[in-house]
Length: 79
Image (tube, rainbow, N blue to C red; front, side, top):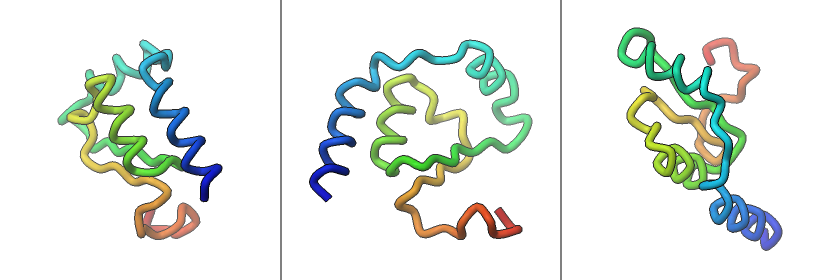
């Protein structure tokens, strides 16, 4: 678990330097409230939320599903 925590710590420290893809951000903003949008991430919830918050994107998504959420796996047909 120590390696996972160290990885998460480095990720959080450096997320402000993430390069956002303008075309994707434009799409997210253009379709906000027009179609349901979710974030489905292999990262842990706290890191995903921090990243979205830092880039002021959280409000654009109807749901956020992270690796540590208890949610059916991607192979489940309902997902």
